[in-house]
Every structure is written in C-alpha cells, then in structure tokens.
Image 1 (cartoon, one colour):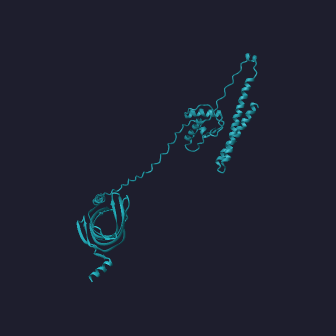
Image 2 (cartoon, one colour):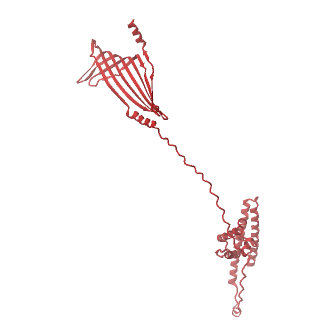
Image 3 (spheres, one colour):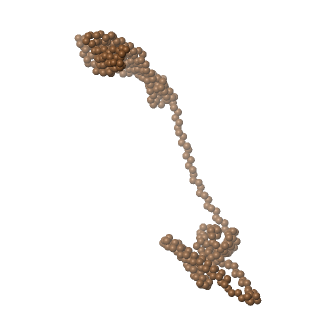
Length: 406
C-alpha cells in the first residue's frame, strides 16, 4: 500500500468519524433511543479512531523507508545544491473538533493548547495530545464564557469557544457561588427540671420510728414458769396415779412499718393449770443403762388470761394521727393426751410424742377495752370504747353447772 492510498483511506475514515459524531449527538438527544444503541455507535466510532491511528503509523513507517532507500547522485551532490524547502505556514484554524468526543487531530490540539496558554494564562505542555489538563482548561473556559449553558468540553471549528480563543475579548470572571442557605432555626428545648419532693417532717418521723419498730423493738421474754409434780401413788399390779400443778407468764413486743404508718403490738399472758395422770409401768435408770416401759394418759385443765395492746402512728399529707387500741380475753380449756416412754439395755431412754386425744374449750370471754386517737397537727385527743363483751361457754359446761345448781 502506497502513501497516497493511505492518505485516501485516512480522509475516508475522518469523514466516517464526523458522521458517527453527528449520529451520536442526534441519538443522545432522542429519548426513545435505548442506551444499547448509543453504546454500539460509540463503540463503532472508537474502532474508526483506532483504524486511523493504525494507518498513521503505517504511513510514517513507509515515509521512513522511502527516505532511507532513495538513490543519491554523487555528481549532482558535488555540483548542485539541494534547495531547502520553505517551512510550512503556521496553522491558524482548526480543521476538526478538539475536546470531549472530538477528532483531536494533533495539529489542532497543539493550536488549541497554544491559544489556551496565551489567552487564558494556562501552563499546558504543547504536545498535541488531548489529556486531562487540556480537557479541564476547556471546561473552565466554557463555564466563564457561557456561565451555565453550552458547557460540553469541546471546541468546534467556527464555534463560540473557538471565536473567543482567536478574538480579543477578556476572560470573564466566574460567577460568585450562591450564598449558603440560612441555617435552620435550632429549637432549644429547656431541660426538664425534675421536681424534687422533699420529705415532710411526718415522713421523716415515720422512717425513724419504722426503723426503731422493726430493728430495735422486737422483744419476747418468759417471766416465770412453775411446775410441781406429786409423787406416784401405786395402786397395785403396776398401776399408778399422779397429779401436777403449773403456772407460767410471758410477754412479747413486735413492730412493723407501713407506707406512712408505724404500728407496735404488745401482748402478755398469764396461765395456770392442773393435770391428773393414770399409768402403768416404770422406767428405771442406773449405771448399766435404761430399762423399763411406761404408758400413761393425762387430763389437763387450763385457765389463761391474755392482754393485747396496739399502737398505730400514721401520716397522711401534713397530718399525723396516733391511735391506741387494746383487748383482753379469758379462756378455759380441757385436753386429754397419751404418752409412752421406754428404754432397754445400755441405750438411752426414748419417749414418744404426746398424742392429744382431744381438746375442748369450755369458756372463752373477751372484754371491751378502749381506743384513743391523738392528732399531732391539731393537737386533739379523742377516746372511745373498743369492742364489746363476748362470752362462749361449751354446752357440756353449761349442763354441768345446771346440774350442780339444781
């Protein structure tokens, strides 16, 4: 392939590239064209550019071979001087588009780079290669010329960007950026103040008295316990009778704390009773252990009197009230039980539990006492009777009393 043929093909390919550019622009402006079709056109244009680059390289290679193989005439060299060809006139117009999706002919790119350095004050390397620096400079120039519309990153022959480069107009300054939007008003929410409720004097007193009632006050004590057992009276054949007399007294004190109240309860009890037992056998103990067997039945009668008093201190709002109430009751009971005790050999004695065969309450009486209230805020004291008399008598005791009286 000769150099003339290569030049012809290059011209044809440049025309094909121009047509592809126009087709690409029309397709991108048509909303009905799919992205796949646009991509195919762009790919075909890139293939044309690659073919142009390939032909340029082939043309350069042929030119170098032609220069090396050209014959020289020594006589002509000695007698005739070869005229020096005149340098080509500098190009003052671009023949194709330069920039994004442009033809980007090296001579056209060199001219644009020189004009950008002269007119815009850039410091671009004039190498005929369209790169990122050249592209950035073209876009910045168009932003200043067009302000907002018409920025496409490409310089076309005869276009407005090209006319400005070869003209004498001064480069306009970039428009100032729009002012930032005013900051949104910040709604300041005042901190929520938690209402601190101070305890009242009554509540403080309740806490102190409650600790005293629950931790310090509890008390229980047995004041006395008396018991006397008569000796066994043997009746013969191993049978015996025995009597006993006992008395005891105890008292207790407890306290508790509620939400806004403190209560203290005290009780006392005095009881006395007699018992009579009949049994058989005997258990003996000595140096060699325990032996024997004893069985007995016991009838016990008891009379007990109890007394209860309760004090309550309560607080409601700013008012404190105190109350005292008390009750007393008397009971008489009769119980029957059986017990077996035994031992053998060197082992210790053993004793079964006492089985209560029956327990009858013959008399139970409750006496009315009093209840008093004191209002600490109003300093007022009130008093009233609490409860009423109540007596319960077992029918068997009633029948016995009737028989005795009659």
